[in-house]
Structure formats: C-alpha cells, structure tokens
Image 1 (tube, rainbow, N blue to C red):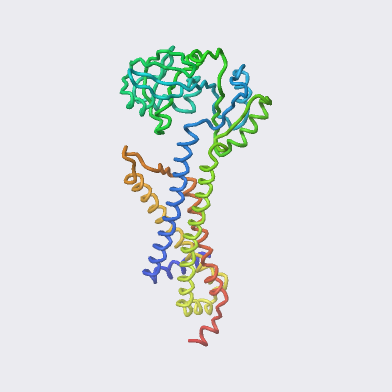
Image 2: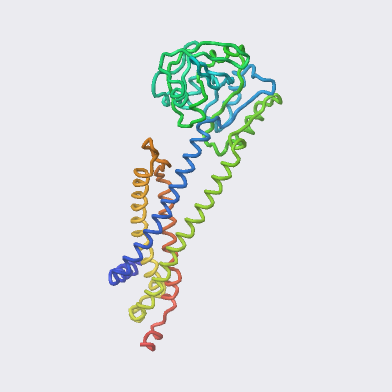
Length: 383
C-alpha cells in the first residue's frame, strides 16, 4: 500500500500542470458547492429569524375571548419537550394620539421576563429602558419617527371602546420589521390588562420552541397536553404556508445545484485520470512485469484521486470562506448590515469536505479498474 502511495505521488509530480489543473478544478467545484450551501443556510436562517423570531412559534387562544387560570396552563405547557419559553400576552387594538396626529397601534402586554427571553426585547431597545412601571410603554422606531417622539413624552392611548389613558414613553425599540416598528406598543402585562379591563385574564399564551420547523408537531403535543376544546393552538408554519413552501423549494434547488457542481468536478477527475492511465501504460506494464500486484496497480490511481481530493477540497474550502467573508463585507443593506447573514457552520464544512474527498476518490474507480486489468504482455505486444 505504501509503495502504491509513493508511485501515485511520483505520477502526480511528473505531470505538474495536469495535477494543478485537476486540483484547481476540484477547488472551484468545492468552493461553489460550499458557498451555495452556506448562502442557502444563511438565507434560510435570515428568513426564519425575521418571521419566526418576531412572532410566536406557537400561540394558544381562547374561543371565549380570554384565557383564565393561565398560570396553570403555562405550567402544563412547560412540561412539553422542545419548548424554550412560555409567556402570557394581552393584545388590544388601539390608537395613539399625540397633538393632532392619530395612528393605529397594537398594545402588547407581556410578562416582560419571559417575553424578553423569546423576543429579545431588552437588546432591541436602542434608547431608554424596559416598560416595567405602571402605564409605561416602549415604541417602535418607525412610529417614533412618524410622531416625532422623545423618551419621557406622554402619549394618549384610545381603545376601540373609546377609553383614553395616558402612557409615558420610556424607550424606543427596533425589531427591523416595519410592520412591528409601526404598530407595536410594548408594555407590561398588568398595564395592558388594566387598559382593557381584563382582570387577570390574558388574550393568548405564546410559546417559543428550540426548532421552529417542528412547531407544528410540538403544537399538536401542546394541544393534547392542554386537552381543552375552548382553546385553539396555532403555529407559525400554518400561518405562513407560502413562506415554508418557499424555504423547502429553495432547499431542494440548493441540493440539486450542489449535486451537479459536484458531479461536474467528479466527471472531470474521472476523464483526466482515465487519460493518465493511458499515458502511464508503459510504466504500469513495467511495474507489473517487475512483480507489483494488480491490486497495488489499481491503488496507485485511488491514491492519486485521494491526494487530489484532499488538496483540491482544502483549497476549495479556503476559497469558499473567502467568498463568504467578501459577501458579508460588500453585499450589505443601507444600514451596513449583511443582506444575508452567512454563518460559518463547522459541521457543514466537515460534512462537505468528507463528501467531496470521498467523491473525488471514487472518481478513480474506473481508471483503477483499467490499471488493475492491464496485462504486461499486452503492453509489450503494443509497444
């Protein structure tokens, strides 16, 4: 085996230009394949974060308008596997009035500690603090600009039942989603309950899960756990079927593109190594005449492919990381942030490297078989 490896190395060194061309070909194929894979994962993560990260993965509603004894129900839900956060919410449509301006809004009262663990509210506040006190509220960036507000201002909230309450603005947030930034007025649970005279009831219970793609499965478990026909359990996938379908379609397209890029690299390796067998007929024949076994002769080309695969894949991974770095640097939003946040996944890189090296090695099976079957007598007869 070691002899076959040494011969393979010598063959590669004797045809340096050909070897370099194969390595560059494999590297380009690997870099494109890995970059497309990382870009796809980044796009998927960005879409998922924008959609599933700014809305509850699972929401529990009541057919009767409000959920009573919500604390007991939350404790039941927490026992379901795959759940990361559960918190009560009070939502109410209202209007914000400041001087002569009136804007539609959605008052959202959270259990702030639990709600923050899912929505990451605290880190989204760019000016001010969390609305922990009575009648305190934080407002989104777009609505702030629309109304020309400052921290410490007082706004008038008008409910759909025409009740008017003054709220103190204690902070501004940015969810990076225009619809949320224009409408959400975030306050604490008690303030929202008092605003609509809801007593201790809540309008919904929101649930975060570790894997948003399993929200439908976990939602069914939550429904079974609660066992209450007066409660309705919904998940973000059922509410965004078009988006989910788009993500699945994009995944399939990415896999198809990666497959054909890899196939092109493998076929080019097969063709060049097959030519190499023909070029090395005389040397292989002499080696066999000197006593090298057929299996060792075949291993020469498998080792060649392995060496080429390792070198080409290593170079390709380096190129793909360079592509990612430059993409994140130059393909950005007006705010200077990447359009698609591509995150380097070590697991994905390792899996891709193993697949590419294996595919490159298997590309030598046909040339290795030719070398295995080659007869020294045939070489001598044909000159």
